[in-house]
Structure formats: C-alpha cells, structure tokens
Image 1 (cartoon, one colour):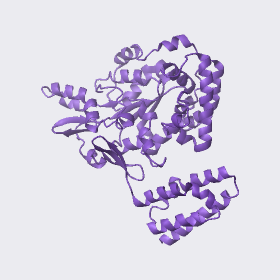
Image 2 (cartoon, one colour):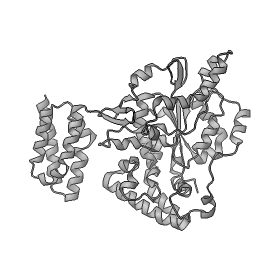
Image 3 (tube, rainbow, N blue to C red):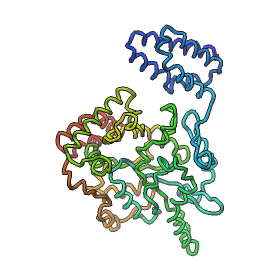
Image 4 (cartoon, rainbow, N blue to C red):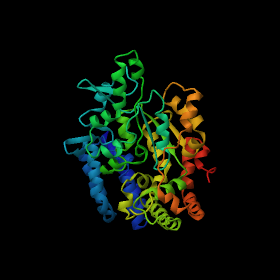
Length: 437
C-alpha cells in the first residue's frame, strides 16, 4: 500500500515538474516551493516510511530540472523528514522548555503541563477555567477582548468590567503573544488574572456569596491576541504554527472572543500618530511613507502570499521597512480566517469601533449576553456607556491634523478586496465601512 502511495505522489509531482519546466526560472522555483512545501503535500507523506521518503527525494533531485530543484532540495528534505519523524518543536527559556508543539502546530506541553491534564484540573464549580496549585486558586481567561491597535479595546474593556460578574485584572498582559516568549510562566500569568477573584473569595467565604463569586468570569484584554503571532516565527514551516489561536485552542477550547475592528485607513493613520518612531508627524509625511508601505505589502503578497505577509511579525524587518506604518495589520480577513480555523463562529463576537462609540447602549447588553452574564437594566447600562471614553490622546493627533483625502482614498482602494472578503466571511456588509468618512 505504501508503494502505491509513493507512486501516485511521484506521478503528481512529475506532472508539476513538467509543467514548471515550461515556465521562467522564477516561476519554476516559486511553483515547486509552494507545492512541494505545502502542508497538503507533506501530509500525503506522513504515513510513508523513511526509506520511501529518501527515494522520493532522490527521484526529484535526478529529474531534468535538477538545477532548479537543487536550490530548494535541502529545505524540502528537512521539512519532509520532520513530518515523517514526528519531531517536536520547542521553545527554550531560562528555566527549561517553555512549550513544545507537534508537527501539526498543536501544543504538547505548556510550562510542563500537558493540555489535557490542565483541562482536567479545571474546577467544575467555577465558571472560568480555574485550577488549584498548592491549595491556591489560579484562573485562565473565560473570554478574550482583542483587536487591532487604536480600535477601542481599552474603552470596551472599561465598560465590560463594570458588570458585577466580571473580575477586573490587568487589562493587557499580552501573555499569549509576547510574554510567553519572555519566560513569564503560566502560573505567573494566571495568578495575575485571578487577583480580583481571589479578593472576592476572601470576603465571600465568610458570607453566603461564595456561589456568586464562583460565577464571576476572568478575561484577558490584550489587543495583540488577535493580531500578533510572534511565536509563529519560531516554526520553520508557515503552515505548522503554532499560531496564537491554535495555542489557545489547545488549552481553552471553549474560550469566547470579542474582536474590535476599526475602518482600516483611519486606524492606520491613528496608529501612525500614536507611534513614537514614525516621524515627522505631518499629513504629507504620512502620505509619503504609507505609499511606500502599500507598495512593500503589495510586493510581499505577490512574492509569498497574503497570509504570510499578514501573519509574519518580522515582515517589516525582513523587507527593510521598519520605519513604515504596519499596513499588513489592515488585512483583517486573514486574522479572522485564522480564528475560524480553530474556533467555531459562535465563539466570536465582532464589533466595529464606530458602532461601539455611537451605540454602546445597544451593544453592551449584547456583549453581556454573549459572555453568558446576567442582563443589566437600562438604568445601569446608560451610566456605564455615558462614562468618558477610555483612550489615549497623543499630542501628535492635534498637531498633524487630518490625513489627506488622497491618502485615505489610496489606502481604501488597496484594501477594498480584503474588506470585501471580510464582509463575506462575517456575512455583514457593514465591514465594507462604506458608511464611514
């Protein structure tokens, strides 16, 4: 049976090589790399013996197009060997292995915990995923509030946490995307999230409110959970992850996500004004550098595809564009698709920042319902939404003025196809942002 698998696959590859040999040098290399190194192609080999794999490698190298193959042969061999050997990837910290993941990007350990063991330790009488270590309570998020920079997550968080069943904590620990790589362990992260809940428990144990406290939910308000994939860069193969959502799914498969998005052209300009390294702060200077950023992203997409360009945290460094606005973060559709690969649609609530600021009194009750919280009366909702917006106003916002109409038009035209994809995925034309100035 294995011989037939090898034969069929070699015929498939042979046809591709014949087709590619009729193309240009660049096209040939690109075609073979994208096909031979794709996840689907490598998965076909996962049950083939190592001897068959070696024969496959040699067959490719001896083909008429060996000159082209030689350039990528070692990369192919390395990735095929990793898929067939079951070798694990590991992130090593100061105190040993931080986490490890298998050939499919699924976590196998997280600071010494196996995902299944951690899930089985969750306490059934707590609504949040809580567990005990040395008789002390630790909790992981019941929900995540995330999005993009300058998209209103701070204000949404400040109002969600006004519900008496939402535990307050450090809003944005950025653990899953950043501090996990800095060796901040699971215990420290969960301890930080549980501080408010533990305070409530301390008083509830002396009263009749213990059950009510156990119904409280713990959240993580790090915007980066949606758009940062720093650990993803540790993998040699873009398709093996682990991406942020895949890591969270391994530990918290029932987690709920609230994602705040903003009209992309306005968000990008706001991020530019808020950044400390992009100078000078003028509308004309912004037009110049965002034009370069747009062209750089277009070139990147043409070369390696939209997914790699959006998810690669180091794309600005590798393309020499560190001093350009992060226009790749405007490819919202890529990040939503990454989420939907690992979580069902009903665990996602997407809100437009523009709608939030104009309709908090309608949206906040929907968010509470999504989080399975008791509804609050209008008499409680209205004062919460009427509180001053939680946002940081940078002096640059005042001195630079509005972005040029030509700049906004250019960015919107470039991103229009991706916004259309987003609207199609979410089945909501509002994510075309045609109603936003």
